[in-house]
Length: 392
Ligand SMILES: [Zn+2]
Image 1 (cartoon, helix red, strand yellow):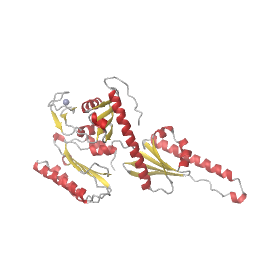
Image 2: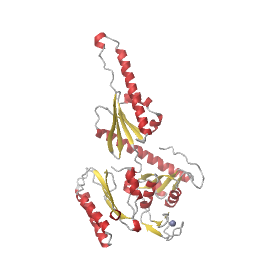
Image 3: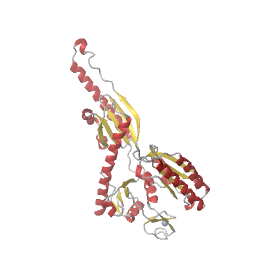
Image 4: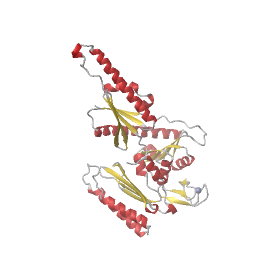
């Protein structure tokens, strides 16, 4: 599975001499509901074949053609009903080849040949995906999982044996209430241990958000031990029987909670950014203003309409991006080159600078202001100190 470091490496890549030799190939299998499994695999092969034709016509370097040949072979083995999507990034001239399995939630099967890798589908998938710890708990057991990009991995297990009922009851009629208390004490110790372990893991950077699966009765027992800091990071809770639930069920519950939380945050962010922009606060809208804020290092979160595309120019010397199609860079005076979609330059820049990226689907208000907006951490022109955004 792809890591943040992988994405950063892709974002840093740029082909030399301005030659378009960075290949990005995305394969999205069809959903199982769709019966025509074959189509997507055929489409993939056609796409690569066409690109190969183009490359031959344009006399592209042998590296690009060899990459396309290799992708064509791989595409030949792809099936429309496979469970995972795929992405390949290649540049033969630089001896660069990376292949990743991805969750089958891409926008479609696509191929791009450009100066940079096309990271939009990847950014849409990963941009705002938190690292989540899913914890199952009852009075004596706990299981801890990492959830990342739909993939669930168990990483820790706790078992706290409780004093058994009846060992002394039948023998001497000895105080059954005493056993009850001992069980409650042991359960409490177990909850405490678990809470501490979660706190340690979070502090070591093991996860950003938490999801808990347990019975309702156990939740009221466990919750008081959960550190307030972790409570803030709680995305949600589902009902689960630790001993009986399957990993697949855990994954489904957790994924649903993540999706719902992301959707809520997306909506809150759009309202926040638009409101801030309106009162000339920590928000900007429209390509020109967003580009300026990116250049000033002001941006904390970038919001892009799902279908946002725009022409722009990029300075061949200082890298300045401009929404006006000008021949010479207004910053350094050197020549500019046109880029057909400014996202291809913005997204890698955002990834390199750890800017949070959110795609927004069909939002009329965002659409009205140009389908692109940003939440700022500060405003250079107002000389204001950084502030913390509370809607996370
Ligand atoms: Zn310049």
